[in-house]
Length: 299
Image (cartoon, rainbow, N blue to C red; front, side, top):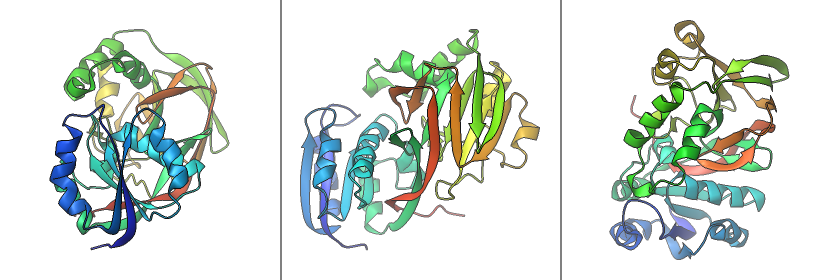
């Protein structure tokens, strides 16, 4: 078991699918085993986690209790304040994509148990202008659906409510002419979605390339060219990066270290479920920036 000197447990009480204090009581015996000293910090409002990261110089473990939005706020604070503690996740949000990527478990109690014998592993991240994401950056169809759902009750928000919105969008003429550079090479065309991926999951759904890795210094770029059912289904099938383009008409994929999305301007970008940026965008991979407690996947 990893034994840390000082840990901080960061949590809030205004989202998720379970009472946070009940959740913490169920996980506390495992949490307290991880370090010699444990501090608990509750967020009162958006931005509290970000600001708290400035004070984490003496902490070698940060345990984040929450979903991808909570993790997103914490990692942006750690990045901006140049902190690099090990991060442990106890999933407690509507979507818990990165907890799946680090294979720590979707159930909070199970995740707290898995943290005890987890390995410390370094992971890449996406830098979009001055903001950090772990899972994805996207514009177009997926971002439009996220905007439709952003006011929904998170306790009832999930894949079953999300998919009908996607099919609703598929019936609309929502394509756009784009120009972007992928590692310096200009790419132009018409698309309904551009999707830049680092993590293994998005919205609880596995990314459809079997050899994708969040620790290889490479981002995967999907360009969905046609708003039709075949293109949508291609995003949920499994293939490897070598034969994806041959097998899936209407969806292209590229590997890249840096992407410049030039036009159209003013598209809302969805970064790990957060909707606070617009195009144009400069996107690049930051290699092995964060250390997470993770479990190896079974072969």
